[in-house]
Length: 145
Image 1 (cartoon, rainbow, N blue to C red):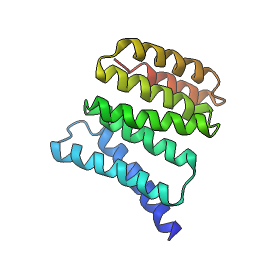
Image 2: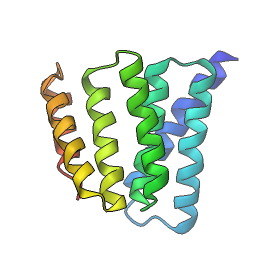
Image 3: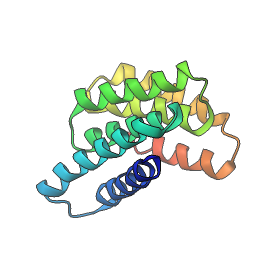
C-alpha cells in the first residue's frame, strides 16, 4: 500500500506542475490543478515525512496564489513554513516556505508582510548548499509581484 501512495503522490505532484506550467489553462484545468495538488498531499500524508508534507503544502499554496485565491494560499503557506520550522527543515524547503508566505501576502495585497517574507526568503536562500538550488529559489522569489 505504501508504494501505491508514493506513486500516486509523485504522479499527482508532477501533473500539478504540468498544469502550473501550461500556458493556456482552462477553468477545468484550474479546478483539476487544485484537486491534483491536494491529492498529492493526501497521498504523502499516508506515507511521507514532514519534508514531503511541507512540499505538498507549498505546492498547494502556489496553486492558490497562481489562481488569485490569497486566503487559501496563505493557509497552506503557513502550514508549509510551520512544518519546516517545527521539524528543523532548512535549505531549499525553508526558503520556499518563506517564498510561499510572501507570494500569498502579495496576492492578498498585504505588501508590508510580503516584503518581510521576501527578505526572509532571500536570507534563507543564502544558506542553500547547492548553487543551482539557490539560484532557482532566488529566481522564483524574483517573480513575486
